[in-house]
Length: 471
Image (tube, rainbow, N blue to C red; front, side, top):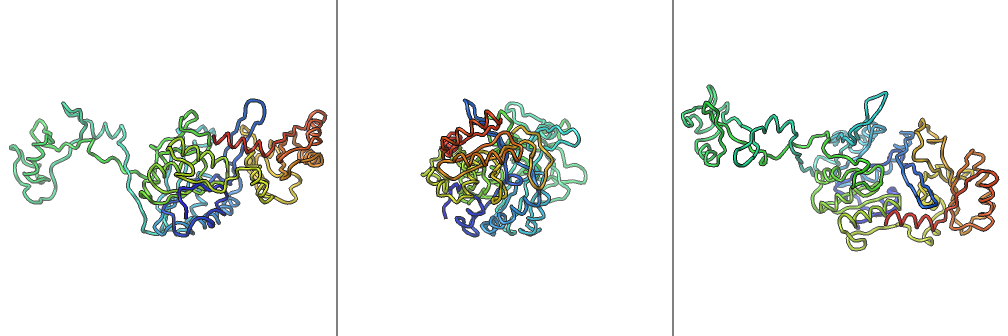
């Protein structure tokens, strides 16, 4: 089984095809809710803009879509492995019930709360500023490396407010007395005994050692205390509420333009906690590749899977630019469509999905009797509509038609015009390998006389656009 590889494809196909059972030490996933992202692509002139965000839809449909994928992830996870599911308020409670059934209630380890933003303005409710990460293991035997964080300013002021003259080291005072005797602990130290009813916590030999090291601090009454230096303390143990990892704001230099991008520190914490050097880390929805960067940086082996060729190219560039890794030497990319010839050989419906997603749209759920519409493009700035089971953002969406043929003709354009009129759309996108002269004349006529804005996009243009995004 290959590792350090990015697979471009549906993880439901990739996992059983390429990944062995009981082979993965750590799985982290952050699936987009309801699996579809909304995009807007502005083609033409000198500016192209691409933005997208998760679509919200029916939770039960989302769980139905995720269930077979979770079964595959469970299959490839080692008995000693750990599983992290990153989600938000839309489905976290439903997912926990699903994962309890799969992993067993007793193998649920933590519900981790991650503060993903500093503030969110909600007029009629408390601001939603956190995500949830559900942490499960496959058994009671699993890797867990405790992690610590630095002390807060409040802790420093309350506990480490003393500063040593000469060295500038912060320290706190630790009581040298104990409630129970244990050896040579009833002596006087420089004429001072322990408090009434208590004993010294250390032997006289240890006290002399502390004195020689300058670790004793005396009150005005001569009572000794032990200095505990801040720079020798391990820090706070990480708890299940993470407010210290940070998040990407809009101007962050670490942003790659991916709307659901997570900070590297978040994934470094998870990878460090639940794996060791040389272990295998899997992210089956790896987006822009934050998990892969964290795993590679921390000397783990890794596998990433994503359906989007654009995402896979972003990952390649990220690993090259940030870690100096070389494709074909340090890692491999598999199943990425690279040429028009490869796309011509794709099964028809797979080609439709590729074209719609490459354009930035959402594929049509119905693949037969689709009335000439293969997908939809959603404006990035469209106000969120009320979720329905059928579809989302119905008011403002642009139809996409895809033809896996060398030259889309006038009859194809005529049918697309009919579909646009039936759905009351004034803009649409048509993807093909090429267009006949008659088709282009009809596109111009429809725009001039009927006000229909049909934008012809060739497969070559889509491939070039994806290469620019990944370069």
